[in-house]
Length: 340
Image 1: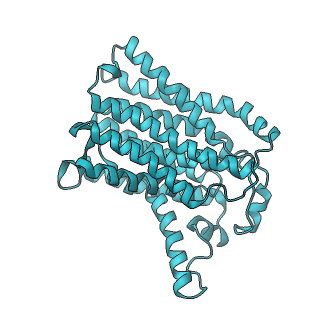
Image 2 (image 1 turned 180 degrees about the vertical axis):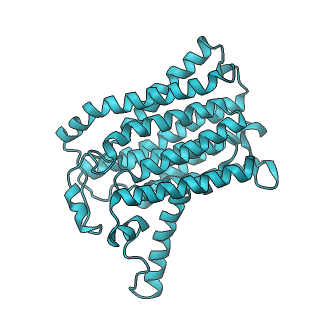
Image 3 (image 1 turned 45 degrees about the vertical axis):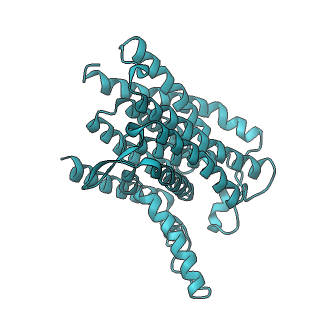
């Protein structure tokens, strides 16, 4: 495929995913209202979030469907019209793409079950932590084994200052740890209108840039579809949100970012590109630890840290803009240091 064609294909992928998510939103959101799939706002959150009571959740299906339409369409287009067929690529390349898609969908399915229990079964906490972790571990175990048996090309990843390393069977525990951590971190970040979606768009743009630098076209397609789908979803999710992504969307995002990071052979890029997810997660861990050590004192006004800033008077848009700016700055520095 000519170099000038690839960016056009990636743009077309994002546009299709955006259009599908944005158009479906006009039908799906009223349906969620009709089915009474509204979010229950717990008393432990900021008091003004009670105004969001009843806002439809499970909106993550919008960008998931956007991806599921855009990606196959463009893969078929590339294989038939542009004679650039994924089926002619090495097996590790195919395993990383298709296995990654299944990983992301599996994480989304776990989130869907969690949302379904909360909404339909009227159990506010959904799946227990143990149930959710068991499902995530089982899913990540399957993906890790797929990479392991896919051979050296599938289980080799880049380590800073070392280069590509064949992880051997260690790829399995590494995948389990990273997938479980990332999907739960994106889940924690989803607490302010537009926050998780917007931060993820910029993280995904950073990954798309790296895909271009590494010549990872097919992972670029997956990333472009994620970006487009999220932008279509954000039409309805920016403050004031008309729909929330729910665990369906937030867990899917974690799985999708892991799929892309492993797919391009640079899983450690999840650290700088996902800096906000890490900060959010650490704020919860530190808050809980400090509370126990001091017998009831709190380090933050409320955790995760986006609520700390809310309690300090920041509005939701300011939080989204600030956290997105941090993601952009860290991502740009990372790319400049590693590739330029």
